[in-house]
Amino acid sequence: MQRSLLLLLVGLCGSSVYSNEQTNSREVCYFGLGCFSIDGNFNDPVNRPIQVLPQDPYTIRPTFALYTRRNVNTAQNLVYNNRDSVSKSNFRANVPTKIVIHGFTGNGNSDWNQSMKRALLNEGDYNVIQLDWSRGSGFPFTLATANTRVVGALIAQLIVWLESNFGANRENFHLIGHSLGAHVSGYAGERLNTRNKKLGRISGLDPAGPYFENTHPEVRLDPTDARFVDAIHTDGDSTLSIIKLSGGFGLMQPVGHVDFYPNGGKSQPNCNEPPSGSVNGIIGGTVWRMTCSHNRVQQVMVSTILNPRKNYRAYPCSSYEDFKAGRCRTCGTTGCASMGMRAGEWNPNGRVNVKMFLDTAGTEPFASLE
Image 1 (cartoon, rainbow, N blue to C red):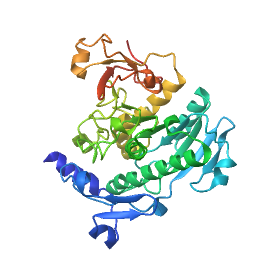
Image 2 (cartoon, rainbow, N blue to C red):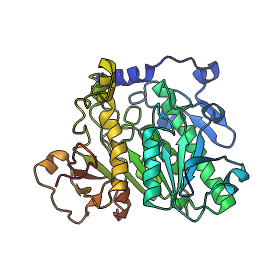
Image 3 (cartoon, rainbow, N blue to C red):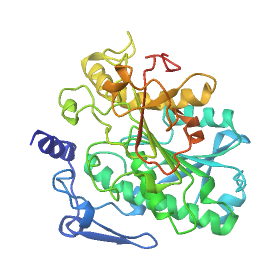
Image 4 (cartoon, helix red, strand yellow):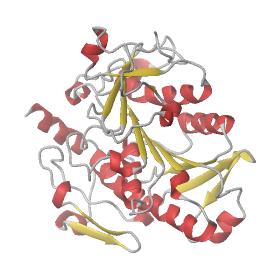
């Protein structure tokens, strides 16, 4: 009951006015993207008590800002169905493409997005695309949650168009999504999943928990959405802890081929009190404490890219309690995996939802304490 009440509160957070069409309809269709329904697996009164249809793509209007080693600091906007926007850019179909996707209330120009872009271009010769869907990611949370479906569809549409017109290959695309962005990635991957082709990789960075945890795989990120799906869980504490002003924005449910749980995945070290002088006032401190563990995953992912020689090895284990008790200090037949960018080196061998644990430092580069 407490969880249902909390989800209702989260859904109501932020006032809004919906059109009669959205209020009374159970389905909405958009040209080129198909239809979006709140029936079927999306009709989940327990985990999704407030049902909302997504806004139209012209309202959300996501942008795809391309950066490469030839234009590290100057964005080149890629526009679906605008051939010149691609042909006159530095996009190259023969190199891997990374799409970075922000979450709730985020934007493509945030400090994290820029840090991720710089780290990726320092690490490899990539097309790095910063997706900005800030027109659809704001309050209320329920509407932002619904909009993830349209944004995912638009990503898939762009990738298919790049394949058809410029020789790109969806297998060479890696989507890196934080919070709601992780589920955006899942929706994109689901649409790109055909008999012979699949999206290459999805990295879910503390995938959002409210309105997604314990839902059907169609509703959330899951291992079928890409050839390889890895997730890092940093703020999976009980959703009720949001009321306690201590976090709980992520989920604990495994959603990938491999799921990493640094420090148990519920909360992160050094997130109890903000550093001196880093925030202003009681409200600033409260917001910092609520979001620290959820946002820590952003720093962790960047650190794994910038510090490839540091130890981020995680061990397969059934629970953090067993890990702390020393029962999982060998890699066994499953093998250990490196959390973060190098997770893709691990071979799942048909396995899914493999849980891996490690303890990390509470400061950069957030490497393993072993």
